[in-house]
Image (cartoon, rainbow, N blue to C red):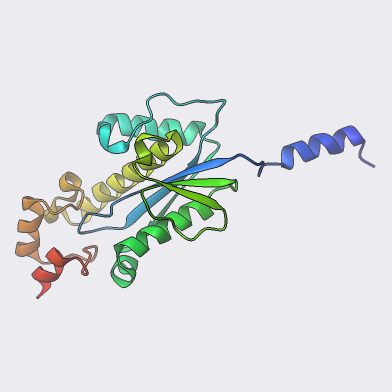
Length: 205
């Protein structure tokens, strides 16, 4: 029979879903003409702070990469999820983004008591949630999520560039730059282009 002291210690190790855990959520890739939309959810560890967290768009690529590794190492838990090009075309980009965010939250190893989401829309969640405009510049956990999502999507673009180098994904990351539009007109759409987006639809006519 286990002692009372052992049972207390065992219970202490099992109480992960303690009240007060807050997850930050953000996305990357709503605007590009190709590839998945990516969302991340992060629960930071107050006892293991990360210096330099900020809106991912304000950081250099090198700084994002370094923070990505630090966040993965120091956060209590984090989760990265996607909504595919097929889902974007079927649902629309807003609903696909909400889907990716929901998947990211549901992928967390620990269940948060509250979720803080960058922007003014909330995905359907089974926990308390709040939307915060410009949250990626205000809330460290959202900043961390923005970095994870951005780096993950940038890495996806680099990988896909090796399969379809004629489009230049490693450089423009799928955005509708002059280079990208010229490649679309010359080569047509590839399997990862969002056919519901007007610039791609125009090329496919």
